[in-house]
Length: 351
Image (cartoon, rainbow, N blue to C red):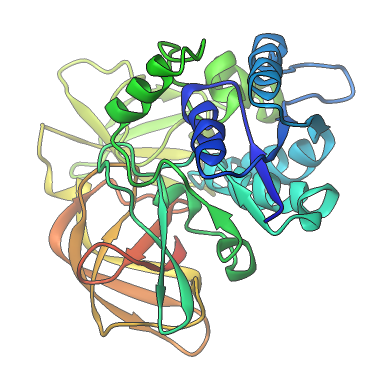
């Protein structure tokens, strides 16, 4: 079997190579270089240490190594998506888009299409039901990353391998230690690179600037203060409002008039909802293996919520949650699981 392994230098993807070799598979190793570089060379994610570690892994296990530069694709597809979403008042999820459009999109266009399978260090699994491959949850509920993979297409899912999906994170580090891998004690990366390398608000300010607007108490209409632009804030946000007498939470945004609405208290009713409308809804594997009763997530947490799903002919859908859900933010993605919270069956963008 012809396997490409996407390796970043971290412990998870390094252990992937180790496990593949134990199975008698010698993968070709690819390091994807991504970053935010515009015409002025504004940002590039430091990658030298990561590349050195990845090269070390390739040498140790006798694998061919190749660096794939996807800077331009990353900028065009992921960074522009992020800026445009924020401009429209949405809360984007660049990690979801990076997986769909870069790691399993642009890479496949450039190199991955020549391989039978693509192996990665994601905490996820696959399961076959009636001859159809489904994305499925990992053994480690805290590390599970299926929500970040929920916008993949079926043609991507059916070729993926997740060698560490059946392991706990502690098991992965133990394997790395026994194999004397230099990444055994290395700190985990924090998602998409630019969020960890620069101040997010500084990044937004560079491209969208500042525009002063009112912060208004939802219940009374009282103006409490000023903000620098609705694009710096998201639904459910508490920090960064600089208002006295709090805590205060962002509960609504008036995009046209640049107004933030806030509500006071630890548990204000305005923060919560049970109805989650979705656009661009689709079944990941092309079918629904269950009924209307589902489990779902709208953010990256170990917890699932029970609900009922209604799908419309126009590609929209509605999740009615059994629980009150805090901070439902337009632009984020809802990941829909079967009633057992095992198979990832669908996803859509919250509207």
